[in-house]
Structures are given as structure tokens and as C-alpha cells.
Image (cartoon, rainbow, N blue to C red; front, side, top):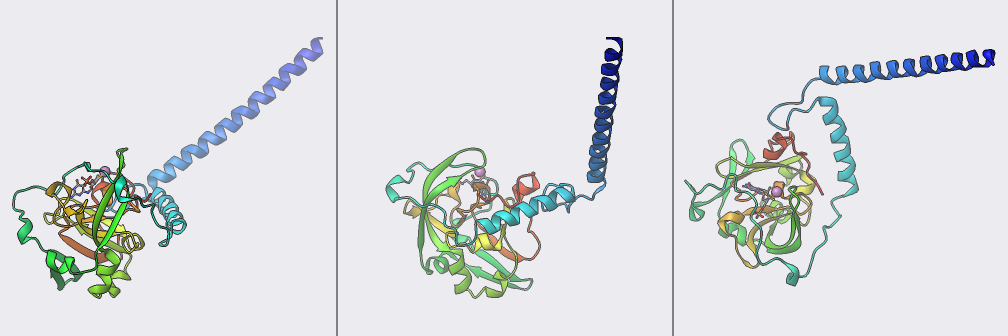
Length: 255
Ligand SMILES: Nc1nc2c(c(=O)[nH]1)N[C@H]1C(S)=C(S)[C@@H](COP(=O)(O)O)O[C@H]1N2
Ligand SMILES: [Mo]
């Protein structure tokens, strides 16, 4: 009896020792991991919300995975016109201030190169082939709605204005005329066959709240990337600034 008891005690001691050691080793390595992460540099400011670089590397890897998974050929589901909402939601209006803006005087600036800016008006854009899309628009705030938009496909715009060399770059940047709202897009998503520069909603010209005279409709992305009131379009191999990515939202924001 005595002997048995002490055996059990010894066993317990040994187990305690093992679990304590395991705990200590795990804690130390977790602490080491945090220290490593915190010592790692922060990513560049002005593009995203300054995540530690190793985290950004991991996020970029998952982004590449999803990009390949939902390749350029993958089409977003479309719906019959009868299912499109009549009262289309208005979400937010950053960069849509009324002061100093006149739809009639609006021009689109396409920055082809530092000293080469293409200026276009609505007539130029409406002269291109018109494409319609009825799809489920999704906002990260948790709502979605089937909506009907029409305009020119970005890929048609690029080929008509001979922007081939620009479209070989990795990113497209778009900004409101006052630069208060801006988005960065990976080129494959911008050139996706369902991405359009839209000037109509439910068969009518856009209203100011929905981004008149021209807005982006990019069904492969969440609402935040669907910039209203486009003022400038630019191209680059570095990630252009992105309003919501800077606040910590995912830069890619793909569906
Ligand atoms: N210029 C500008 N574009 C914008 C926004 C904005 O605040 N300003 N909000 C975005 C968000 S979060 C969403 S969900 C959609 C909403 O578009 P809607 O108002 O036409 O529904 O526009 C996007 N484009
Ligand atoms: Mo949104």
C-alpha cells in the first residue's frame, strides 16, 4: 500500500514536470514568435494599415491563392433584369462633395505616363460599346442587393484607347476628382470581363449619389472598391493608395 502510494506520487511529479516543461517551452517559443513579429519591420505607410511585414507576406500569399483560384475566366453570377432592385441603396459619399463639382464640366483623366494625360468626356465614353450587368452587389458592412448597371467594360476601354502597355502593369489606381476617395485594383480584376466604367443604373443616367457621371462597377470585389465619381485613372507596378486598405481593410477585397 505504502509503496504503491509513493509510486503514484512519483508518477504525478514526473507528469507535472513534463507538463510544466512543455508549457514553459511553448510559452517561450510563443513569446519568441511575438518578439520576432514585433521586431519585424512594418510595411510601408500610405498603402495599407501598417501591418507587420510577415503578416502582410502571409496575407499576400493567401491573396495570390485566391487570385489563381478565382481566375480571370471565373464569371460572377448574373440575374434577370426583373430581379434588379428598384430602390438602389446609397452607401457612403466620400469624395462626392457638391462644392466645386459640375457634372457638365467633368473630365476623366487617364494618366498614361507622367507627361501624357488623356482627357475624355462623357461623349467619348458613351461612343464605346455598352455592356450591361445585373449582379449581387455586396458591401462589407453586411448588405447585398441585386443591381443593374451599364457602361463600357474596362477591358474594351483599354483596348480602344490603346492602353496595352499600361495594362501590362500590375495595378490600376482610381480617384475621385477631389482625391478624397481612392482605390487600388490588381490588374486581373480590373481587366475582368465584368468590370465596367458605369454611367447608367436601371437604364437611367447615374444620380450624383450613385457616382455620376461615371463610376466603377467591379463585381469581383466588395462594394468598397466600386469607386463612385471617377476623376483619374492611373497605372503602376506598386500598389496604389487605397482609402479603406489604409483603415485596415483587406487591400484585395475580393469575393
Ligand atoms: N467616391 C466614393 N465611392 C464609393 C464610396 C464612397 O464613400 N465614395 N463608398 C463605397 C462603398 S463602401 C460602397 S458599398 C459602394 C456603394 O455604392 P452605392 O452608394 O451606389 O450603393 O460605393 C463605394 N464607392
Ligand atoms: Mo461598402
